[in-house]
Image (cartoon, rainbow, N blue to C red; front, side):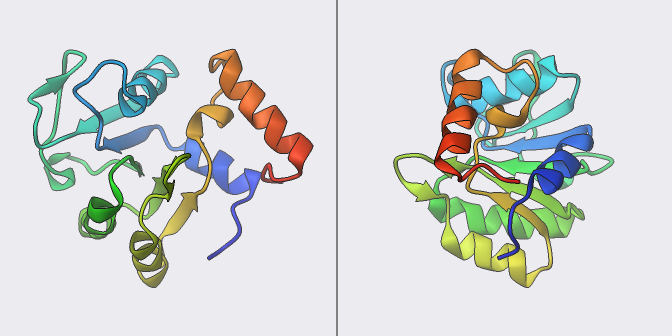
Length: 156
């Protein structure tokens, strides 16, 4: 897997149309909070969840291929057993830049998904929480990034 650098993260965040695949219907779940934060930061965020008609007053898409034109990027916030298919859905939709969210308690969300993304030549970021890199994120996300810097594992 290509090393995740701060420049790759910056390049990902430079795209303003992001599909949030697996955004939760629950208002307190991480994926919903991230979706809101992306909207707050001026991104055109597209919620994707086959079990919701709308999220925060926005149309929720059942599938990536429904979003026209296709988003520039996708962040995948899914259980490991669903992430590989989501990577293939990104390929089908023409999305080349993806961020697979790392679940702190459960490791990376789907090693098969990472393999599939590499096999397809996608620009992949994984292993980091997106909140750490968004300006004006809540303080505890900045603290998380600061602790990673102290430990020497923050991307350079």
